[in-house]
Image 1: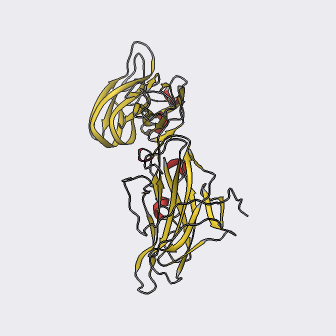
Image 2: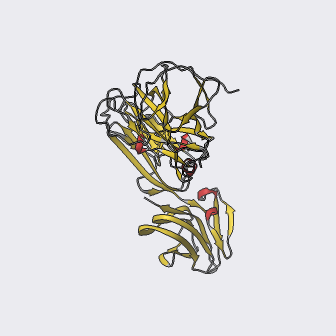
Length: 419
């Protein structure tokens, strides 16, 4: 048996939504902001032709007509209708609410109804149960764990109040565009859906081609003190640098409670010391915002020695002084390392230098980027050597070829700058 998580009650909002949703633009106070709709395909019983089976949408509404502030109550809704006439004559649906972190349910009643689209309806309360859903959200059923039943031309709609406990950035965060949501197998994970509300309507019994139709809408909430103030990021990697570390530590200073993102995804932050760890190879963008003010830091983490494909005589050994703890060594002329890259704008070689070391040539496809001499008066590990710009974004194979013979060449990684 599923565990009930809260009790439905009354909310007085009336609305007549359409079967085909539109995106509105907040022309007046209290207007609903609908999102991206979702539908499935079904074979119409009378005509035996394929058409839209169910169509669903979600939306949010602020009573003031303005973006709600953190802590202010606003409203969410979901609705779904059956358009074509399946041979079963009906569809059973159960919605699961998948809200982003920082959106809390307000302890007030939920309003709902099933009604004819052509006639409209008045939403009422009662007769609902709420459970933890299989996708990590909250499931709504009729009392007794019963689904909602729709016949052709009917709409099931529900509305409920929420509040934000942090600023919500909506379209400035990743949208839930994963393949599973689009093919109807399940909704996108909340963790990768930014500040977007999804409602996954499980649909069945009507012969449709999806298990879920999952519309979504970006949510917004302004922090206290909309104007904010200057933001400062100090310490950490220099702007546009290539650094031989998979972590970065900054000092953040901003008025009030700043909001932050790492590579476009929300990242918890506060004033003071902030450490970002476990960073994957590639270019990273950290942004801190306070109201209308923001500060950004961009840097690149290289691919480590173990990432290269090897041809010819190479040895991969451990080295505490090397980037990533490993170093590739060769004395054989023509020995080659290669790495497929995507969207590269600049490249940097991470290599050790020492007296009597050899030379390598670095190619982007067939183009020689640079000949790099690794001989130096003293031993230097983890040297970041710029290979220059590739101009526009470039995708292809980078090759590092040993050009000397009998002299050691020690390579530790490749920085691929994509921004």
